[in-house]
Amino acid sequence: MLKITILLYNYKSNHSLWFGTAEIKGSPPPPFPLSWRLFFILIFNRLITILRFCSTKLDF
Image (tube, rainbow, N blue to C red; front, side, top):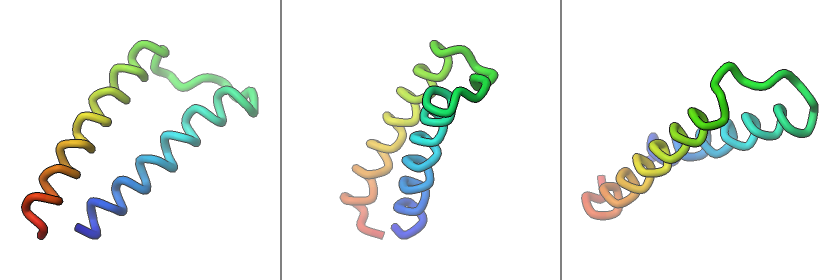
């Protein structure tokens, strides 16, 4: 359970840094185009919801 929460925290912080540095600081954009980034974010969100559901049901 602790590992899942750490992964969720790391995902959220990386997610905010990923977009914040590209838009606010004016750094060069990441190598992936925007459509690919959105696609990966949707997949990660789905995986995180599945992991949260499993962690609440199984209660490691």
